[in-house]
Every structure is written in C-alpha cells, then in structure tokens.
Image (cartoon, rainbow, N blue to C red):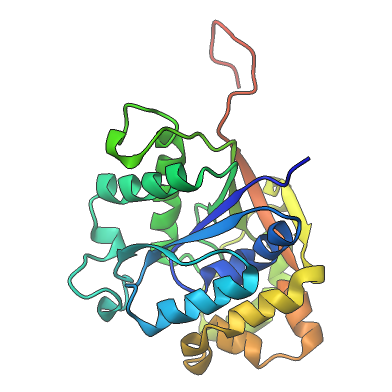
Length: 253
C-alpha cells in the first residue's frame, strides 16, 4: 500500500523539525511525498534559508510560505500583517491553495493549545488549518484556489501529560506553563528514533534559533541520550475529516 502523501502546516521555521521532523523523515523514507507550509516569515530572510536546508534534510521539498509576520518579530515579513492580525478568510484561502495543489491524504498541524508553549501564532495556525482542510474539499469555497481536494485526516501534534517528565526540567527555568493533554486524548504515538539523526540535523539547521538559545539551541547543548529522550517520540490527536458513521436521523454523542 502506498504511504499517504503528507502536508505539515506550522507557524514558524523550526516548528516543522522540532514537532514533526521524525514523522516527515519517516514518511519520506517510505516513499511518500511530503511538504511543509510555514505561516510566517518572508522568503528573502535568513530563517527561510535555514528552513530550506532543514526541509532538504527531511526530504520535504522546498519551503511553502503564507508569508505573514511573526507576531513577535515584525521584521520577519516587512509590509505584511502579523499572522494573528491577517483577515482569517485570506489566510485560510492561501492555505487552501497549497492543499489543493499538493493534494495530501494527511495534514499535520499544531494542536488547539499551540503545543507545549501555547505561542499565539501556533494557536492561530491551528485555527487556520482546521478551517482550510474542511474548505479545501468544497468546490464553491475559494473557487480560484484550484480544484477541490479533501484530505482524509488531520493530525494535531501534541504532548501528553506524561511527556512533562521529559520536557519539564528543561523548560521550567523559562517560567513557561507547559500545555499538555491527558494521555488518553492521544490517538497516535510514533517512535521516530530510527530517523532521529535526520530530525536533529534538521533542528540544528535553524542556526539563528540555535544561536539565540531558543528550542534548537537547547537541543544543541544536550548530550545524545537526552536528545533522544526529548525528541524520539512524536504524539498526535487524529481529527476525522471524512464521515465514517452511517446515515442517521438524529444527532448522537
């Protein structure tokens, strides 16, 4: 059976590597086409050049950009609105065009919390993606964005409460609240240790973030076993997009 085509949608350059780098590498190694849409930063910036290198390592094609500004870094996309300030219909339409062009069976994005740190751009990217994957299959929505295409499933990248044991000690000094979900909400747990070397190489390709001590910098400073403990597993919540229940005459829980 062919490995399903996978499109990942994340807020910033480096989110794709930190959050789903193992999954992207795993699918690519199995012969799937994979791609990444990044919601923020402009094409002519150093961070997008680093993104291109990370995607090369993960075999995930070239950067696909919505081109909005990072909410905390206005210079990331001069002259463009912050992602959170952009008209929702515009952002959804831009992502619908990428979905219809790439035609993925599976889409991956941030969970409703926006991941561990709850960054506002992560949360908004979740909202935009949720709307876009539904809209992409309806031919009367965004008719200028290409022929309708309905992905089969949306997977929300997440962390269970039990992951706090691994991440808590590293993020606790930052004072950030960790946003995790009950373990029984997780539907898919992927061991990505066979692809961990590629995932870490992709993370470290984001040299700007390594230098400023953000999450890639934290990873760069850790010994191998600790890197594996933090990055060797990826968790998801499956969000069904295609009806699986039979026809009915009332709403049921």
